[in-house]
Amino acid sequence: MENSIDPDIFDPVKVSYITNEPSELRDEILDRIHKLPEKVELFFYNTKTPEAIQSISNRFTLTPTQSMFLTCIIRDVAVGMTYFGDMVKEIQEKLDVPEDKARQIAQAVTELYDFALEDIKKIQVAAFPDRIKQTSQPNVIDLRTK
Image (cartoon, rainbow, N blue to C red):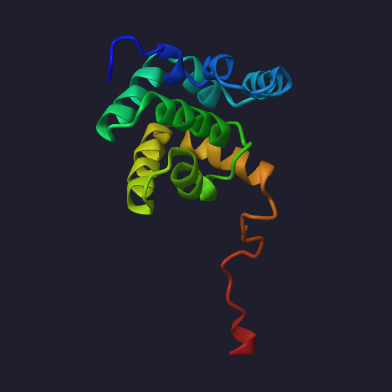
């Protein structure tokens, strides 16, 4: 990647300022970030997060535009605006890459979320209750029916 690339394309908080996203969406995203569990909020403000996103972009030889879209997807999943289960499809469509490469990128992103994954799962359950099957039944077998 060139040295003239705007480093904000790798920053999940700042990327909104260099995209065509409306200011209302930017405000909603910032509001959501500030309401996140501490580990997830730290993910957004940790200086290593943009470095990790840039590393993923370099590993998969993404263009600056693809990197910017990837950063937006990473942000949107973490704040509960995009369903985690749609990440491969989102990456494939927005980055215009084959499904296999999208899966590999999604796996790298999942590893990036690793330290806050449990909190991100909770955010996803709250944001997409109709898409996430929850087991409300305990794992109990009624032996009387056997």
